Image 1 (tube, rainbow, N blue to C red):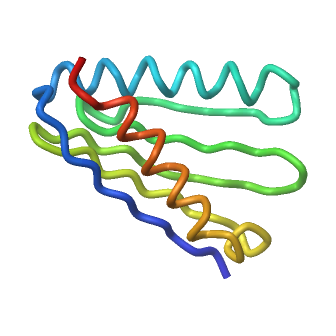
Image 2: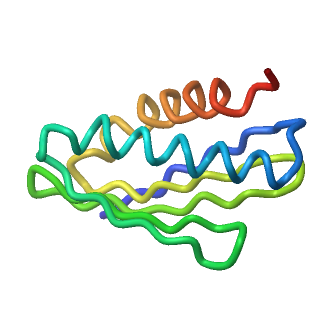
Image 3: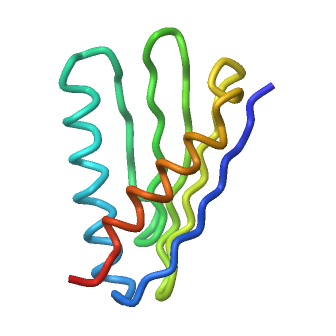
Length: 105
C-alpha cells in the first residue's frame, strides 16, 4: 500500500520568495536526478501556490505536492510499497534539503 510522507518547513521569506525557491530547487532536483535518464519527472503548478509532481523510475511511481504558504511550506510525497519501508529516512532528507533551500540568506 502506498504511504504518504508529509513534511512542514517554516520560513521567513514571504510567499513569493518561497515559491521562487521551491520552483528553482525542484528544477535543480530534476536535473540532478533525471540527468542519468533513469527517472522521468512531471510537474505543474496548480494555481500559484501548489506544485504537483510525479516521478517514475526503476518501476516505481512517486507522486506529491508542495504547497507554499506565507510562513511555511508543506511537502507531501506518496511513496510506493517498495519505498515505504524507508519512509522515515526519506522524510528526514526532504526536511533537511527543504530547510537548506528555505533558510534566509
